[in-house]
Length: 310
Image (cartoon, rainbow, N blue to C red; front, side, top):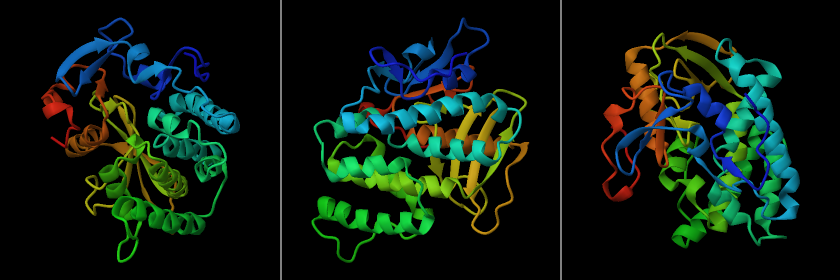
């Protein structure tokens, strides 16, 4: 299975082909089960035609070529790590690379590419290039405060007496409410870049649990890395990333209590919560290794709008 970045000039994936192949239906010939949320139709589909389009990673501005090379390098590393992660928890530099790659999923989209076209010399380009630069958590919060002011001025005409969020707990609601990964306005995208840098810092300070199921119960989507407050008894902000139909990665803020990754079996209730997190942020498709895993989500979206948690 190739994990090399896809060259320009061909069909390219927002959700990598190598990742989707972990969700292949064993009863089909190299296909997974795919639910189109716009129509409610479930059918076998190839990863080749799922969450992909032509020239998705065409560099829209030469100044961004080093950043795209960085993205591709991290994706290639993660492609070699995921098989191991399905068997045993990742540690050290491997865990750090996975954390960065998960944060990148919030900006490495078609809207991101479109927002960067024709913006040479703008503060947007400067902000995007900073994604690949390590930062301290305190600095990331300070950057976010400044970005909030610009964002609020754009959206509401004022930045006084308002804050988008005050803590990491409110980051998730803000990201989902504004759907920053779908925005194309430059001010929104400057803000999305700063949020991504903050997520990188937060993810590196997460305790990760690898939740297992004997049956292939976990689903995924065309936005598989998601954040939710619906998982866990204390409603702590959790990162959710299905690694396969049998393993789902869940991360929660560690603060000063970092204990390293662990592995355990998931309850039926946890499977429901984790799958609902995929539905809440999916753009168009849910994917699974069996039709049965998708059937409860098969009601079409009214007017093609985003589905909510069932």
